Length: 147
Image (cartoon, rainbow, N blue to C red):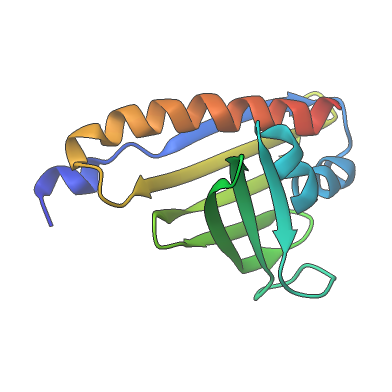
């Protein structure tokens, strides 16, 4: 593994919300709503509710028969505080963590951390992938907390 791999930037987004931590948690762990926040994407839940470690779902993005799947699995489930997802796809790998905590002045604060890689892309493009991911995930998180 190249030395710069360890320095790969992790996407980090923090949002404050007037929502209670419990309501913020409910919204950021509603996997179907995640898909609705990303253009041309829907979420397919692969396991029966409720969400727990082992829950699997796929974010499917596409149009006109051309689709791209991003399968994920919940590997850590600590409601109402922390969830960790592992990306299990052939094309997309990595992980995401969403942490919800009380906000300093009330409400809640949500921290989203994610590392995403697209197989087949040279490591040289990792920073670009991280910037695009940051923009996409920041928009999704903002909409999850405000819609």
